[in-house]
Length: 298
Image (cartoon, rainbow, N blue to C red; front, side, top):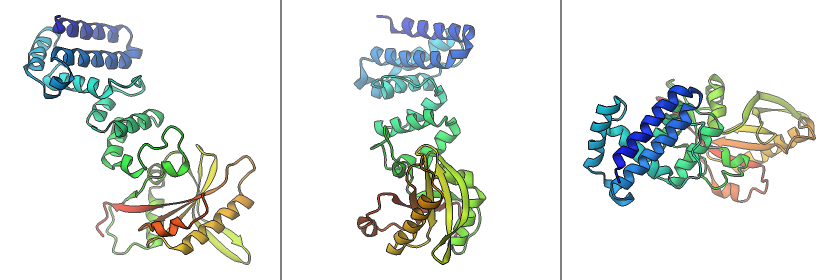
């Protein structure tokens, strides 16, 4: 079988298709490059040999460049081959993602990790730059991996740690400093926190008994239809923090939450977690995570 002629035919058809039906050229690119990758693997004698590569790709690249023009360098054909190897077991390729997205994804060796980034890129409409940033910041590791991706809960979408970016020189991190760093780039904080979080207010004043208290941040999660109380702590997690946020959750549920909202949840963002404290926390609506200052000269 002449695999080169088959590959050339696939690529020629794709070029013609893109000129005629520009609106769907991305899907055509993906299908064509996937098929080219499959044919290259077969031409190389199967997946095992394809992993190591051979002179065949160099030969095909030279011929395709001569006959079809630019765009078929050795690296491009290798990417098509890797594209097929990475996604050959997937039932569908998301047409919402571009070839540039998939070039980022094929560099990920772990199947579950790659599937995670493919999923969030599609549902959150991430740009290539945003996808690259998520991968760079190890979001998959920080979000608890893939366990409940198909039917996630609020806590499975909260990253750990939360990365708070700053270019300032910070000598000492207090709750006040941390609070203001978040306010300076609240949009980034909401994205970093997870999916569906929107800003309601900060230092929200509430009255419990005869005393006034202030909630660090009050958010709402549109995906889970619930208010989210955020408390900031610059120390290790302590048992009293659980009691404090439990009161705030109770207040929101009684005085602010509507009947059609789900129950309020609380998130304690602290410097260091303490699994023993959470082990005895009986409130399933309370979650914890840690923070990390990125770019600080502390």
